[in-house]
Picture 1: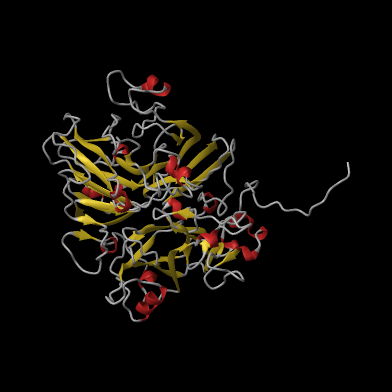
Picture 2: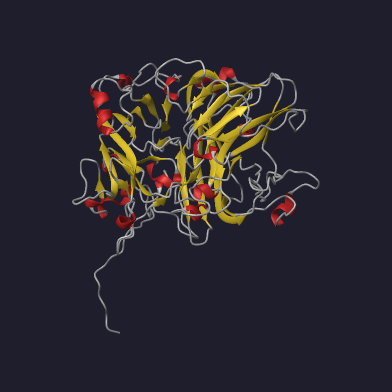
Length: 610
């Protein structure tokens, strides 16, 4: 077995944040690429500072001049220390460690104005946390910076004896992390709030696989000649792959590998009973681990990632190569296109959300089985706390939005509508200071929830949405999609926890065309919300079916202020967030001495004679 035997240790990593430009193609190489690109080859040495992306020139943000940034590869229980230095001009940031539960290290979750103040230009911040096992990733949690390049993978391995699926693979290599991301040909802020003429909407131009790929201009047919990512395997061996969906826009990603079934063994860092599929559909923030057996003739095989939903309009896709050692680097077959792609076979996570019945062509996420035991409290008939969270868009009328002396945020949707996001009729705004460290300095009226809204709160009710939850309570959350936009499913991520997916689907009442909170409550009273308690899988990110619902449960045993939000960046910045506040201030570890502070400064107006 080539799986690393893990033991307690201290892993450290150091990051420095810089801004740089990409090249246009390999024929027009900028200075860093001239230093480290081997002559007469279409490759780039891994240690160099040449960032090619898809070969189209644009500005970007990077960590350590890498795209994606450095991969953090550690063992379960390792104490990880990461120094982030912000060298960007005029920008601030935080880094969130997506999937790391931060038990005992809540202040290092990386959410601006919730768990820390943003890191200002020229400043450094030391993150410290203990690694929980699984495939995770890190990314900027400030503005739209993740879409401009600030992201990277985390692989936390554990001893084979602790992994219930370790007998299914021979190798778990650092080179077999597969990071999918979307990519624009301009800064993401160019699309916010959005345009009404050229380049409307927020869809990407292409996808990248481990920061690599090629772009075909839909107008001219010209294709860049940048390298594709290559994953190497040896005949007869079984390999664990760790796939991360780091997309930031609304497109699901469909992954298929030519001639190789995928044995799914984990999702969002949590093991499941093995399931054989041919295609995985994933949403922003999700991770899926699968095993590939190298049992095909020696050669090279296509890996195809297609953007679905809105990305289908521009046929957004990317390719990579699965190569057998000592075989060719180029597949013998013609490259799959968006319209003539690889056969899909059995699909994990189908978009049709027909998840309440067995089927031969697809497996829904809620049909996966947990490979570990389930907390008995999760399986009880009634949870201690039940929270219904409907979410939707508010459509502004122009005369309503552009009032004198009012400057409300908005997003210009692809339909040219001007919208903001609501969860339980509240559009989230961040507080002026982190409540985890400065709660006494935040006015109580800053916070709200569905049962406690500010006086005179109108249609665009804006406040810091906070739901208080008792420590150790069993919590059930029911998410209800009132957006109901065709081809759009919203993935929600809960910080600090993994939760058990109890149910998902659409209304069984065929007379109901559009689900809403009232109908979901009625279905719940009648016992018609689909729930199943046979080894419900653990996840931390779940996509709510379009015009449907998701039910999940967790035991609130990790105190803190945990952000819960849609993982589409452009929906985050217009308010599709809430804070699940677990426990009390006394349940939290002490705040370190000299922990950075921030907040409003509005003193009385006074003038002193000189």
